[in-house]
Image 1 (cartoon, one colour):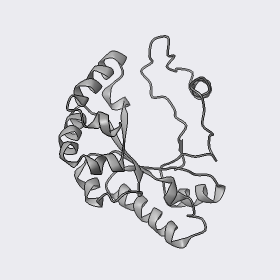
Image 2 (image 1 turned 135 degrees about the vertical axis):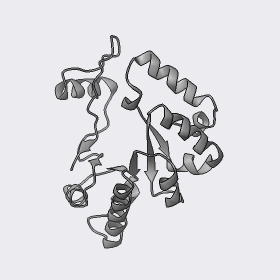
Image 3 (image 1 turned 45 degrees about the horizontal axis):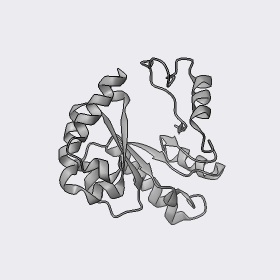
Image 4 (image 1 turned 45 degrees about the vertical axis):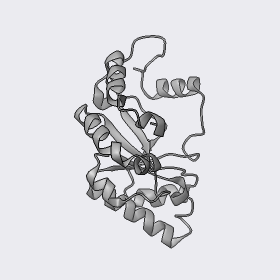
Length: 183
């Protein structure tokens, strides 16, 4: 969700309409909100998050670690997933300090019952280290290159025969994504 969208008070109602129109259960949706959006809109955050949480929509904090977000916000806001920014993943297999920071973030998130996705995984060494830290998912060029919509549709068809076709009805199953579960 962009900062502009997030500042609209009617956002929960708009998302509710989208959910109703798709026919999918609300808990099949996960909205990504960047760390900077959360920090820049503190006044609206709690109010909107409460509404979205009541609707059973999952919330993901994206780009965690590049801003100055308070770790306290993870305790008070209902995030189900945390995406660690690629800038923190870049040298985890060569820099002990970077590695310690990423491990601490993963441990803290898990203590709070928050799933973790590591962004920007480009080497096998990074992936193996993240596995050893019990990171839940990884995303990056090592796993998949950026794809056009048609390529993603074909990938999903290969992984799951029941897939959403943009020109037909929507299935009621979770679709796999280009993020890969690593633990």
